[in-house]
Image 1 (cartoon, rainbow, N blue to C red):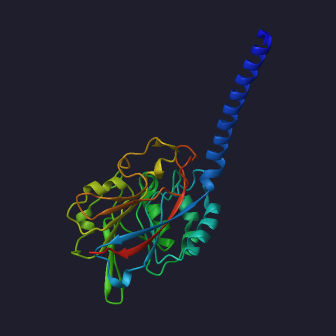
Image 2: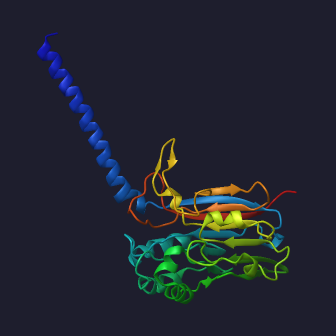
Image 3: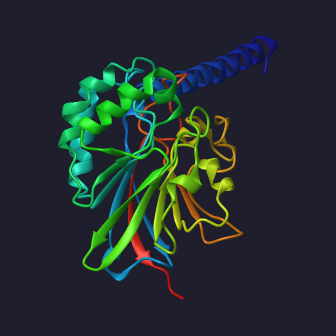
Length: 285
């Protein structure tokens, strides 16, 4: 083979590699910006609790988090989201914070959509750090008018027949003043589910009667790479990033939802937005 032919083949080979690389990067960018952020993953999880009363076995919790309305997600996007949630027929609906991203006024426009969400055991919420930063009072008002009970270091008792469980909510660990002792006041051995925006708040739980903590905040990292996982997560979402975790020192389980919206950058990569469907079971002794 002559030198010119070798040079030509080498050039074409390098050009093909370069073109392929640019094409992959270009497609990845389009996918991360235009496709995955709108491709909701409905995840089903069965969680067993040792103290779960008989009447609550099979209870279906739909857990959502981190809408970040106003940052590449507006109220029109809630139309499809509401339909998807209602098709899942939740018994209990839990929202773990960051309804808004920047402008709290958009939460007022979300009220009619929030009202359409139905769950016979109730709709409960806590605020996230963005909600506190922008205007906690306005976001709380919007959630309340939308039919949610906002739990700020407080709890509610849910009853079925002669059985009961408690839903507990604490303020955001970053911007609020979480007080679990106050939130649990009056509870003893009642089967309890905690809503905390920040998942790493689980490290603060020691002797409280909580079987399950539901959280968001992490977005699952928002960008994840194969064999690497998440690249970064925010403060208080370093240890528990996505999915279900079992604490070693007690029976507490921590479930972290990846959220619906995005923040900082409007992209998701190998980290689809998520609606979590959790079915409660009685743990075997």
